[in-house]
Image (tube, rainbow, N blue to C red; front, side, top):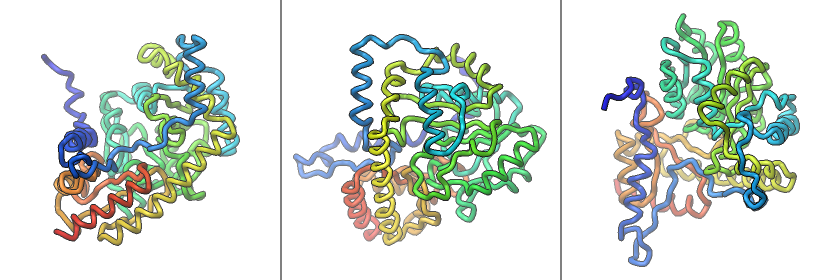
Length: 395
């Protein structure tokens, strides 16, 4: 069967390939505690160990029991758009009209809609190397080209305005950034973000910023939305990370007013609407007691970060930039190996600790870098460090 040529520009999602290998090892006798084995510790997937709070689960049950499962408008429940508008006002002191908010089937659908609406064949979109692989593949799926620009630790693994200005060509359509970033957990400095927005705007381009980890910022310097810099910007967000609703597949876009109708037209045709049950349940996320719970969880993630980063550095891993958000550590493993891929599979098979090699996230230095997710419990992290200690000392 002849396949579409765009598939040639979309690589396998190696994170998931590693996850499949970890699951296979986890089913073996070596991981069975009843046989004296050690269970697999999963530090490879960016999924909080906290699930949706009880109030959200109860809201979902009530929605099903009352039969409120019909299609919603393609832009989402008006009540949920209004709740998000109030959240932006309270959390970020931003006046975001509900009409600018479009509810989507996860942040993935949000990115797909934005890319399909804005990019086409011949367009180029500037992105940092390293970056989340799916983001550049959304660009490729729109038949555009993701242009990766090297972003090292000296610039927090993020693009700079000067870099964007140098790289801009007649084919450049805009930038797709993430702050905080997956895989590095680092954010763009506020003044640098302002300069980036101005540089892109001056060239008639579009700025899209993935802010799905914004709620999980640990430094007040970075806990601000790009939306503060103008109504012409696009923010992608999600209920998966801060709100703990990963499998519910619910996200949203904040759009310039003129882009809402085109995005709505695409959403009507491609998705009809996001899950109505998930939308009704998400309304409970904004109850004061539930927000308090999310803040307790954010403090717990920060405590995990404050444990794991020094522990890894003591083992000999280099962590050149402290993650200020999300729940990832981007660590240099070159003291132990010249292949992060081989190293991760060695750790997986010998220590039963699943990590993610850098291959997914860019080209430059991929063999030096490993991503560790501290979304798991502190107990898991402590056990993982003990196991890693035995591996690195044996090398």
